[in-house]
Length: 332
Image (cartoon, rainbow, N blue to C red; front, side, top):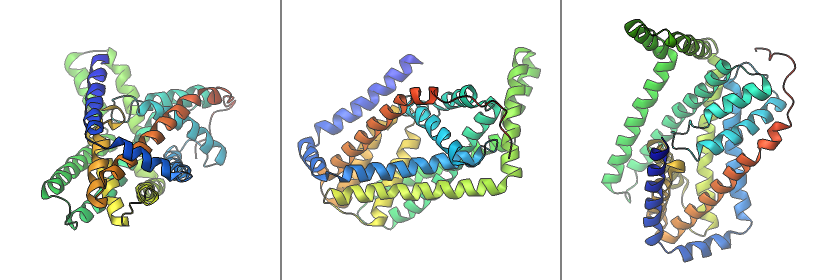
């Protein structure tokens, strides 16, 4: 696995190197320096989206109260976990085990409850993403400046991602994993798999309870997730306006949708290094006519990512100061 991670990281570095070699980075840095206080505004916009994602997770975690205290706890845990997600080539789930362990160690949330909520939250976000991408694809089809090949690639990517999400949801909703493990256990007679079957079945039971018995929470989490995806478009819209190369709302939507689609497809590359940057550069160049503006947006986003990852890893001592719950968490 270490070799695989290194290979994928090198692929991302190579892609980024090609972009840098063919871009006026000095001009991009000049544009970034002119943003000034606007960088703080962009960070606040991203913070708002992160808080929205945290709220979505809190809604799916039925075992904790919907209070500001628990919201802050989950925000800290998510900050740390997302730092791992952004540095591991694991499709945005490399930090999920870290979150489950932190919930158990510091707040006595059972592994089954924490794991189920994490995957349910991820599923809700991806379902909402399909809606967000579908609207972006409709905007893309109505945009004459985009090459037909780019539209075809976008459509194929959306179709592939949609099928993947439907399958991922079905696996959770209908207990496919535990059924498969039970079948395998019966075939090979491996008693060691029995414990794994019981653990997976316990997690899947939480999925069934959430999707079938907590439809109000499911709908609320889905609404929050969709709102977060839509709000994320503001970051691109504001960045290009601050850089002096404004775009329309629909153009910003297309750019953000394309970036998120590439992020989902290129999950094996840590932080989408190179792939996301190329997507931003190409689309911003098409809509603004200035490649340096696209490069400047890339620099702003990577600066934000680096600082956010550092903040996540730096929150470990803060979490250590939390006192574990003295009583089991009530289920609501």
